[in-house]
Structure formats: structure tokens, C-alpha cells
Length: 463
Ligand SMILES: [Zn+2]
Image 1 (cartoon, helix red, strand yellow):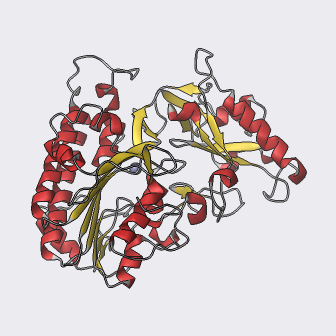
Image 2 (cartoon, helix red, strand yellow):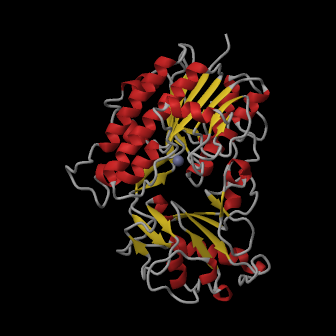
Image 3 (spheres, rainbow, N blue to C red):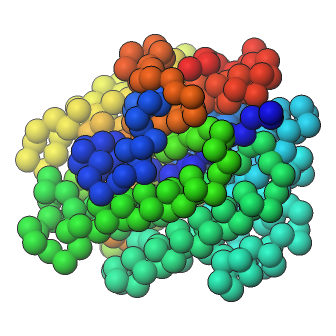
């Protein structure tokens, strides 16, 4: 009897809201966890959707992939970053290996699968699809079918999760989730599949938009507010949808439920470039009167040693002589300057002067190798309690309103992993992190499940 494995990916699903609440109101999660291999999943550095899912499905780190975030440096020229997609993934994914072994896959909404590449199976691309008019399915004709199945409109992603219209956003998230699961069950029923994987973006959107209402440790939390139970109730809804998938699966199919990272309360933003201006490391030609995005044209490069990008973490670049066209940091001074910038970042304090515990990584120390152009420093501001704001003109280093729209949560290093292998495996944890599973262990474990030899360039191990 051929084996089947279904992966239900829940972007950003976080341990505190899942196991933290004792799995109340989540009978299907409870059922899955019993007799399974489960625990926290340690994500990549940095724990960001792109390239986290790709790291999970290739068992390669961001350096090996040459993908350091959604947006990456194309060259050492002073230019805007480019946004990556599936065409930037050179490493082989789980489904590439499965296709080669004549095993058939269903992929639905897995991040970084747009534009769709041919495979042995069917594919509906991810939330980075530019719009419904693009070709986002393989085969292309699948597009009409999924719209039909999804009550007229399959929703790739909610329109704008950083909005003040919380009520309509919440409705959109529910509809999106319901329709995605419906399409997943439809594909499970109509395809002859071996491996099926879906990723739902709803948990990520709901955390970013509603965290302040649900977490008493958030600065803006008000007890008894109307959205107090939104995250918990949404988790219960996911539980219901998972229950429906379990019913639709053959009784001997194995199931993985996994997230790419967790979430935590966001205290605020650190304006990384404001900080560099104050430290004398960055000069702008004219300081803006109100907050604006920092563009290369605004920078006085001859007086600049470092600049940074916004996001859930900060990427810092040094302006190196002979590398950047108007570089100021002599090559021979690179390591000294980099260590100095690192030390200054580690000294960052909150608005009351208390050190926030910023962690700074050197790419070559955390990755096996560094393809393409890595940042010079990868920075967890306050260990991800703070996000990075790239804009300037605030007249301050700390901001409490996000410069790209309301957002209450940051990503956290640990997500969740549950492998319900029908037949039972017991609670197992085998990765070097101790009681945890590494994101890199997922792909080799899946290949091993299908009795495919794990290729040597996969850095995780079979759990
Ligand atoms: Zn994510």
C-alpha cells in the first residue's frame, strides 16, 4: 500500500496560543498531538516567512539559498532591494525529489511557489502572487476550478492586514481560511496524490492585526475589549478545519501540522537609520521634515559607513570602499568597523534607557555558506521585541506606531511541529536544540518517510 503524507502549514502559528492554553476548544489538535512526535520548531535566522518555508522544504539555510528575506540586494550598487519569488530558488525542494521518484504532489499556497513551476502533481501558488489575473496554478486551467470550488472566489491573501478596519479584516481572514481548506479537501479528493501540502496565511495576519487585543503583556491591551478572544477563537476554527481534513484523509495517511515561526508582542519600532544618523555612521543630504522612507538618493554616501533596512528584524549594510561605489569603510577596516557597529547596536536601550538585549549576527557565522549578497549584519532588535523601521524624519529612535501601518506582533524564533504518524511514534525530540525540532529536519524526514535517500546538501536530520 503506497504511503500518503499530508502537511497542513499554518503560517506563524505560535506555541503560546496553541499548547499555552492547554488546547482548550481544540479537540483535533489534541487528538493529533496524542501519540505523535511534536514540539516547538526552531526556525531559521531570521524567522521570516520568506525564506522560512523554502528552508523547511529544501533543508538549506538562507545563506545556502542566497535568500535573506523577502527583499534582497541585487548588487553592491545603491539601489532598492528586489523581491524574491520561486524563480530565485535554485535548491531542490521536497516535491522536486518526489516528482523525480514518480510520486505525486498537491501544493496549495506554499510560500515562494509563484511563479508556478511544473511538477508531478498540481500547484496553487502563494500569497506573493501579484494578482488573480496572473497564472498562479499548475496546470494553468486549475485556476477556474478552484474559484468554482471556493464559492466563486479563491482568496490568495487578505487585501491589507495593516488596516484599522479590524472588523472587515477579521471577516476576510475567516472567509479566506474557510475557502483554502475547502479547496484543499477538494484537491485531496479529486487527485491521486502521495504528498499534499497547504499553507494558510490566516494565523500570521490575525497575529499582526489583533495581538494587542489578546495579549495582556501588550502595551495597548485593554481588558474586556471586544476582540479579546479573537486569536483563541480563530485557533478553534483552524482546529475545526483540521478536523474536516482528517475526516477527508484515508485512515492510514500521516499528517504534519507545522508553522514556519511563532509570534510575540511587539513593543515598538527602532528607527535604525535614525540611530545611525545619531551615531555619526549615516548622513542624509537633507533631514526630512516628516517621516519618509529612506532612499539611496537621500543619503550622502561619502559621509556614510552603515545603513539599515526596515522589517521584523534589521539588515545592516556597510559602505565599503572598493565594494560600494562611494564606499568609505576601507577593506582593511571592515571587521573592526563591523564589530564597532555590532557593539553599538547591542547597546540600544528603550525609551527609558534600559538595554533591550539586541542580538547581532554575522551571516558567515550562522550559515554554512553565503550565496548572493548577504547583509553585513542581521539584527534582532531587543531579541525581536522591537521591529526595525527604515524610515527617517521621526526625530526619534523609538516609535510606537508602525511606519507601514498598524502591526502589534513580531515574529518569534519558535513555531510548532506535530507529526501524527498513524501507528504512533510517541513524543520525540532529537534535534541538537534538545527538546525541539529544527526547521531543517522537516524535508529530510519527509523524504525518509517516502524511502527516498536524503541528499547530502540537506542540513537537517531525520526525526
Ligand atoms: Zn510566516
